[in-house]
Image 1 (tube, rainbow, N blue to C red):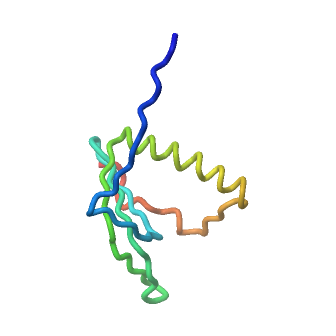
Image 2: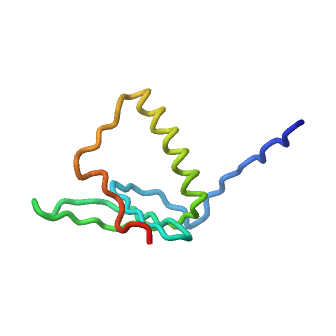
Image 3: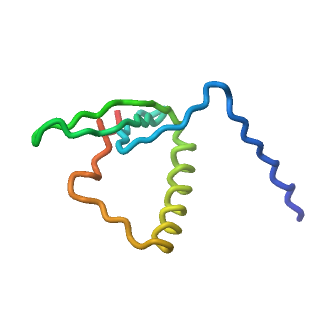
Length: 100
């Protein structure tokens, strides 16, 4: 049985499209969606860091799972090319709240 060809995808950047840098992402989840809040971290004192929130993005659970798969695949390719990525203690926490 022949499968139909997948549609051709054209990505068009709107006038509102922006790129930016984030070295922090906070994740919140509810039964309906996931919220990713991207920002930049700066150390204020030895005891305090400040995160300046830059952009928030809501994703459906299905799109979140698809993003997870794409990131997993791309991280594996990156580490195969450049070596393992090391995460220092305290860097892994990105969840502001558990699932609500």
